[in-house]
Image (cartoon, rainbow, N blue to C red; front, side, top):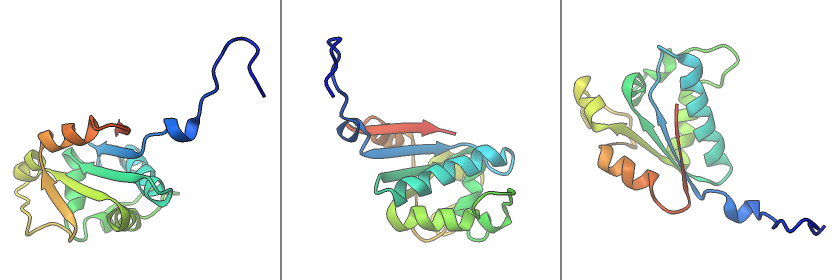
Length: 135
């Protein structure tokens, strides 16, 4: 159907971001916000979107084995399952400074988690066809 008012048609498939960079700053201190970030990341991976999920602030603890299993939020998908989904099809990064403040090192984290800093986050977030979200 043509637009008779001089408007142009939007091709949403080609306008969609091809990569999603998500920074989650919340952990058990703000469980709904935390869960939303992990859920969006897992759904995006399942939808075929390239995903980079960044753990910062209190979410940094979820880079450690077993910590996600301690997280509970009624009516939300289990955090370990969401992390597994992200790791299966995306990238999970722990902020360098956040790790250092918590004495977390590369030998401490879940297999597949990388530790990287702000320069890498900015590079990813500003890449072409990328959408960045912060929770």
